[in-house]
Amino acid sequence: MKRLFLFVSVFVLLAALVGGLGYLQFVAKPGMIKAYLATHAPPPTTVAVSEVHRETWSPLLPAIGSFRAYQGIDVAPQVGGILTAIHVASGQDVAKGAALFDIDTSVEEADLKNNLAVLHNAELTLERQRQLVGGGNTTKASADQAEAARDTAAANVERVRALISQKHIVAPFAGRLGIRKIDLGQYVSPGMSLITLQQLDPIFVDFPLPEQNLAVLRVGQRVEVKVAAYPKPFSGKIQTIDARVGQDTRNVLIRAVFENKDLRMLPGMYADVAVVAGEPSAVVSVPRTAVNASLYGDSVFVLEPAPVLPGSAQAEPASADIVYQVQRRFVRTGETREDRVAILEGVQPSEKVVTEGQLKLQSGARVRVDPEARLASPPIMSKE
Image (cartoon, rainbow, N blue to C red; front, side, top):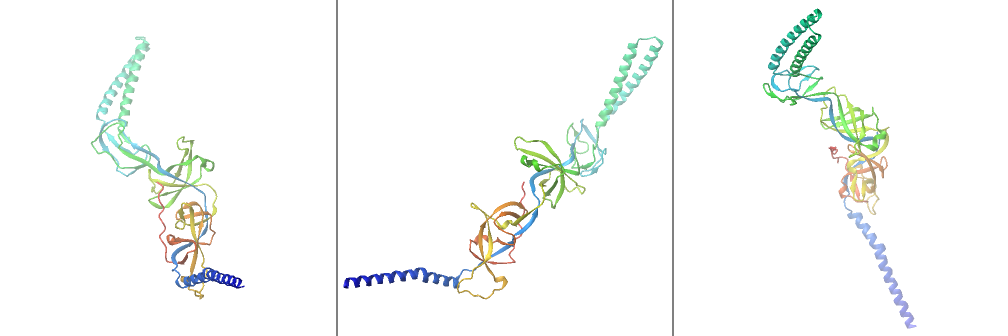
């Protein structure tokens, strides 16, 4: 009996000890931790938020292009010589046929006088030979020879006149001149660039697109282009789709035409092109700064009501002091336009996402919204 009593006493004592330790570990200790957190919780992180918007976007095909003049040339002489006259100034608008430069023609003028005299003599000789043939005093061959001499002299006159005309350089079409590259009295050689001439209205934009986009491209399709010099985009339309696809790049070259009455767009300018390739559709978008990129994918922090901690005050706080809780959600992103990103999966319209202060956050963190915390919209980086 003593052994049985001793065994039961020891068993009860051990059971009480294990029960006490379990109560301390699983009941008392968590309660103490919750009570401590209720009185010593870290302050909420201050963040800026933005609402998820539902917007209407038209499908766009982005590309990089360059402006090209409707007509553009380097004005160059066909023959060499000393420049004797400059009739225009740099940057001047000229009409078709306007005089630009004159090259010295003194030698050609002398040759012209000589050839005119030879031509006059050849015409007189031909007339006498025809009279002799009519009287039967010479052969028809002599008259033919005289006629050939007359034609040769006339050709020499026309050749010299053409050479003089080539030394009088005129504008082949209306446009705007560039910066003059030569001075009065300077020797110019054949093919030397004297000045540029550009027809600026209308103006072209040439840009490549991948061959898989050919199914949605057509002549007359609307094209929008942005340039670094002006904030407002310009609108034009596709004029030509190239007849071949590049074997090296598998791209097709597209040419769009734009009105340029104010001559703000210039050849050679960088063009950020977007081809409108379909009907508008609804998308869900968030600011670019709300999306966090990582090796595991893109994510956003979504605001949710914060749970009330045990022992915390139950009074309704002021609107500026409302504490929220954030949850990390992985999202699937789509197209980016300016400072907003389309979200294909992960968030719903009217939800709020954190746009500033994410570096200090983790899922479940408590935050306070600062309505004054707003960073300036990030600049749109050039694709060049």
